[in-house]
Length: 98
Image (cartoon, rainbow, N blue to C red; front, side):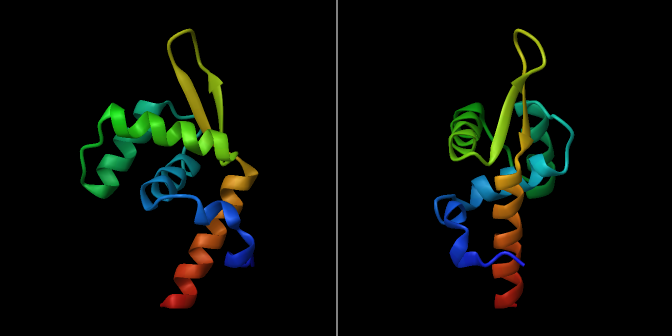
């Protein structure tokens, strides 16, 4: 079990970022739009580009998501080991609170 207090990265993330990370973790090299569609389906929301991509960029900067290229126009994102550790820490924290 990962201790929540050891996962400093989680403390730097917003709820929206944690949720994006969780969605990205369920997919194999999704594009930003794949993540947006999956998130919107689960959250019953409508996320716009102006909110999505800055948050994905911050997750990349935190080292929680790896970014690559599918082609000249499309990037893909995948959850990194650090991102999975952050998700495990967050899930552990929620579990302890229930």
